[in-house]
Amino acid sequence: MSIIAEYGTVLLILACLFGFFMAWGVGANDVANAMGTSVGSGALTIRQAILIAVLLEFTGAYLAGGSVTETIRKGIIDPNMPYLVENPNLLIYGMLASLLAAGTWLMVATQYGWPVSTTHSIVGAIVGFAAVGISADAVSWGKVLTIVASWVVSPMMSGVMAFLIFVSVQKLILDTDKPFQNAKRYMPIYMFLVGFMMSMVTLTKGLKHIGLPLDDHQGLLLSIVIGLVIMFIGKMALSKVREDEKADAAFHFSSVEKVFGVMMIFTACSMAFAHGSNDVANAVGPLAAVVSVVHSGGEIVGKSSVPPWVLLLGAAGIVVGLATWGYKVMATIGTHITELTPSRGFAAELAAASTVVMASGTGLPISTTHTLVGAVLGVGLARGIGALNLRVISTIFMSWLITLPAGAILAIIFFHILRLIFG
Image 1 (cartoon, rainbow, N blue to C red):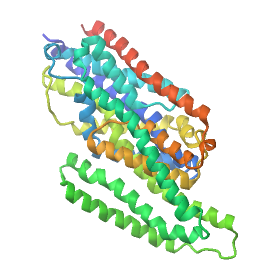
Image 2 (image 1 turned 180 degrees about the horizontal axis):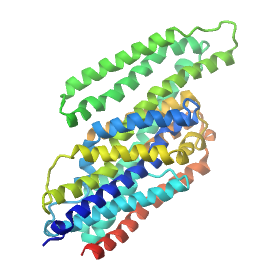
Image 3 (image 1 turned 120 degrees about the horizontal axis):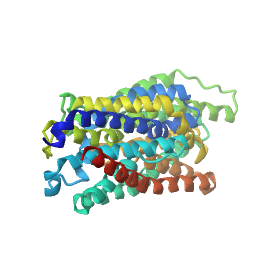
Image 4 (image 1 turned 90 degrees about the vertical axis):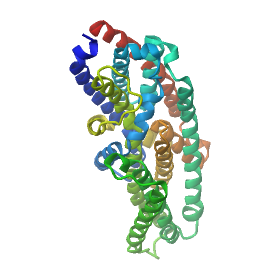
């Protein structure tokens, strides 16, 4: 009797537990990063941020998480390698070890308040177990290099976008003679961008998983319509706000920041949805691989759909992690890199959400941590290098460097333990 036939149920239970543990780590560490700008700028309280994230992280993970899940599950390891085909139990042990390793590292990092990359953690773990436990040839190094390149490209891309968005806010609104009037004039444009970005990935990628596929043109058109609706609602709300002509410039500037505070609610929603759609793959990708192999009786299937309950489990784990331990890391991004106001936080979140959404739509797993840090750096640089806390930034960069080897080493250890237990 094969290992899978004998212990299939036990392996599935372990996969669900480890997958939920990993998703909990994503929620505790990475989601806190995603919502940190909203809390740090004062636009949202921690309680409000958690409530928003719970709803939209869950929605993004369940509806739009399938595309990236395919990359994490099948893109890094070559499933057609003869040795792996003959020994499918090794793939199961490896994926279980990867989930447990990444979840353990995230738990340690969150305990100390380190904002680390969950994508780094799981990719490092999978590469570690595959290279040492199976063979270096089992790793699709070309795919790994593409993912590593995205870790460099994504913060640069979001940083440039955040820089440009905040500079436009400064030129059009903050640094003008009539900031309050200009805010009412130009704010709807930014609201349209948020509505468009937030709906784009849902319509073009997410709805395929619930049986409502739309082609690219239909998705683009509907996203534009949704963006226009949000813009109209925002315009109506802003029209009700009256300017006090007797007030001084400082009061008007404060009023403008309050308007951006309202906008931060939209960007927080966008960031939460984008994060859920992209990073749920870190938890459910390896879980989906185990489920596929066990259900097929040991056959490593080249292509198979991700069961809805797997995405549901990952989404639930993210929510529980955020609600229980999310506060530990949330302050780092929001307050320690650079001083954030609602207008600065808005620019950072819109840029980061746009980058993550585009990555999720193309199936490329990126680090939300890298993307958001890049965006916050971009906003800080728009005010000069002196606005950045370089010591905190260097600490964050060091934590990123440690994460890859930590995930790989832990995965190798857990992989050998599982082989000893199950044979």
